Image (cartoon, rainbow over all chains, first blue to last red; front, side):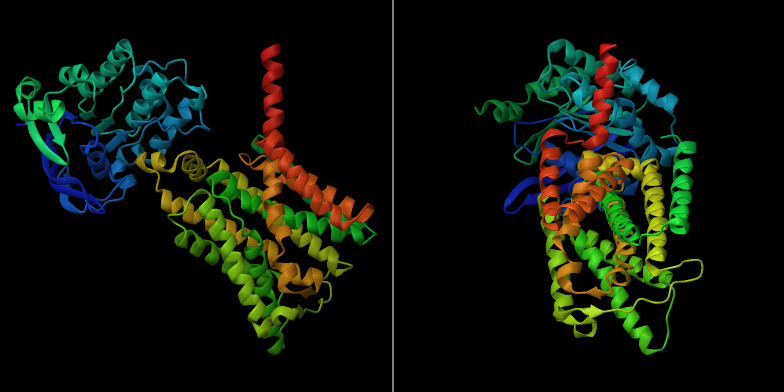
Length: 239
Length: 321
């Protein structure tokens, strides 16, 4: 049995009277690939905001590697190994690609053994940025910014990577490039939660899929089970 | 600038300052240089929060004046006890008080960003001005006189001494600012400036960094304001909280270039000197006008300041060659 790395119990988040997440339970094993899907507004991004610490949940407990992290500030969770990328790329625009990676290396990875510039270059190799180390990060193309998002997340030495719609709006070959990066990363033992609207990518990548609808978990299972689930069909097609 | 060059510049500036003190005859030059250096410290201090961290402080005059009033109050109290402490005591007091106010500003405005932060700092300055207006111990709205002490040994006049103190503090501020830019702390501040949410998620303790940044800014501004009463000998709220001080503290880094430690230094020397020359040769009203025009032109034409402009030109020449 692989060990549980993340355990989320009855996670609830309200914005005023609106319940964005309603008592969601789920868990993740070490090195697992989990897909998180759901219609727009179903609470996917709120959920990862709560797990990464960008938002505090109203109720529920989040346990990471056996420790309660529910009330921990976002930067402390990053240092423990919960790292996220953003749906809309948020590079440090005044910095080069390499400098972007050095921020999490100095501030996050140094707390778990430390990294060096050689490792930064290795990460750049992994995402295919070998010759772009000194490029101005604010002037990258969309797909390159997505890659930079992932590279920067890797530089923080994650044990759990939460990838928030890293592929939205990309062409089919670009989607494959990003998938390839995530698979390589997972092969190194990093657990991945992938939030995505591109079903082809989610079903190819995930070992297990969770479906959210209106703040509730409505289904969970292997990709093959999820496609056949009547609840999921209803949530997506409204029949 | 490489390390050797930087320390050469610091020592060179110090030697020039010593020679100036030893050889100068006309006292006017010390008065003028004092004002320029005072603006330089304010600009360098402002830039630590404004340029490096990305938080625009419109209340620079508030910090400056609080330090000036700390000197007035402390001087009055100590005179009552029959004491005449050295300048260092006043500077330390101003630095501590303004550092604490900086820290407090950081705490009170944690959730404010962009224009809201700027408005909050402006409001803070107004609050302190109101306090000064109504505090009788330091003269209230009619202001307060302070006696110039005798010049210390090695200095033939008190203004020479004040100039030299200001020079030392300017060099100190420049060293601090350059150290920050090249440190892990400074890189964290740059991440906060570029994208605070992303910085936090990359492990940067954004809150702590912001608090340190507002505190360091406060300390340096306090140092700049503490000797002011000895320079003017008469302080009233109107002049101590003058908008000109706040505007200069913003304009000088913007003109020089906010992303570099030497940006505000260049901006302060150029704009400060121009202001002094114009107020002597033409009129003191015109120099206020000058700041406005220069600031607007830079914001529109060269948003990254002179340093940025030079870098752009260099890059263009290179790409052509």
